[in-house]
Image (tube, rainbow over all chains, first blue to last red; front, side, top):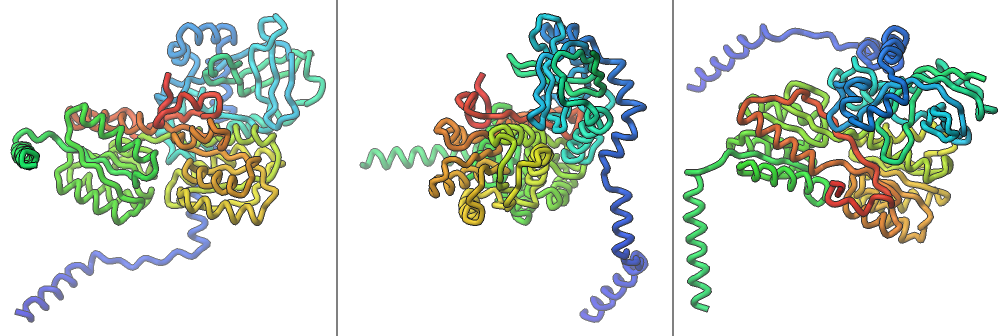
Length: 214
Length: 313
C-alpha cells in the first residue's frame, strides 16, 4: 500500500515537473528599469496633452463667466453637463469651464496661495477670485475636462497626482512669470475653471490661460 | 417568582419556535465585514449597512476582521460557508484583500468594498470610497490657514498597510509642502490608535517643544494627540483630524481640536448595500466599479450639524 502511494506521489511529481520553468532572477538594475517603465509620471502625462487637448478643450467649452454664473444659479446640473465633465464622480461637485475679462480690484500676494479679486460686471466689487499660485488649491483644471475619467487610473493617488500636475503646469507655463506688484487696477483676461462654490462664496477660478492688460 | 419563571420559559420556547421556523422564510444573507467597532467610524459603516440591508429585507451577518488579513480570510470563509449572497467589506489591506475576495468571487459571491480601495479592478463589483485625497486637501488647507502659513508641525500617520494612510498623508503634503515656512519636525505612525497617538505625541512634544501644530491621519489619533497636549498644558497647539467623528465634533465645540474632515461613512455603507441589492436581484452592476465620494470640512462653523458621519440639513 505504502509502495503504491509512493509510486503515485512520484508519478504526480513527474507529471507536475514539465509545468516548471527556470526563470532568471532579475538584477536590481533590471528591476529599476522595469519599474521606471511602468511608473506613473503625472507631469509627463499632463505635458503630453496640455497643448494638444487641454487648452483647446477648455477654450472651446468655456462659457462667458456671466452666462455660466446665471446658468449655474438656475440649474447647476444642466450647467455642469454643458460646461463641466459629465463623466465626473456622482458626489463630486460640478466644475465649470469659463472665460472672463475684468478689472483687478484686490490682489493677495502675501499668501503662497495667491489670488486676484476680479470685477467682471464693472460695479467695483469682486465677482470672482483667480488663483495665481504658487500654491494652487483644488483640481479644477482636471475636473473640468470632459475627456478624463477617474476609472482609467490605478487609484486615488495617481488620480490626485495627475490633478496636481495640471496646477504645476499652469504655474510653470504662465503664472510664475506673472508680476506680483502693481496688479490692482489692471485689467485681466482669464480662461479657466471653478468648482461649484459654497453658498455666499466667490467662484475660485484656476486659470489655464491668463493675460494682463493695462 | 414562579410566574416570572413560567413567562421566561414561555418566552424561551417562543424564541425557539421562532428560531426553528425561521429557515422556512429565510431571507437572503448579506455579510458586513469591517475593522473593529471600537472606532466609531467603522461602527457607523456597519450600522448603516445593516439598517439598509434589513430595510431591503435581508438577513445580516456582521463581523470584524480587526485589521488582520488572516482573520479577514477566516470571516470571508464564514460568509461563504453561510451562503451569503453578497459581502460588504471595509478591507484589511490593499494587497492582502485581493486573494480573499477572489475566493468569494470564485464561490459566486460578489464583494462591495467601502472606505478602502484596492489596486486591482475586476474582482470586486464595486469600490465605493471616500475621496481621501480631496478630503486631505481640505484638511490641509484649513491647517495651513490656522497655522498662518508658517511654523513647526508634526504629522501622525495611520497604519501603513492601509492605502488611506498614504493617500491622506500625500494629500496633506501636496498642499502643505507648497509653503516652505511650514516645517515638518516629526512624522510618525500611530496606527490609527488613540492610545498610541497619546504616547507618540508625548515623545514628539518632548523633542520638539516649539511645535505649533499637529495634523493627524484620522480622528482617533487626533483625540490621542489633543489629550497628550492638554495634559502637558499646551492648549496653543493646533490639531486637525480626519473622519468627522462625534468625539472630534465635541472637541471642536469645546475649543480643543480645530478642524476635521467628514467622510460620509454612513451613506457610503448604505449605497454599497443598495448596489448589492441591485446585483442580487437583477445582476445589475454599477456604472463604474470605483466610485469616489467627496468629504466635507468640519470646523467651528458647522460642527453643530455633524451627527454620526452625516451633516444635518
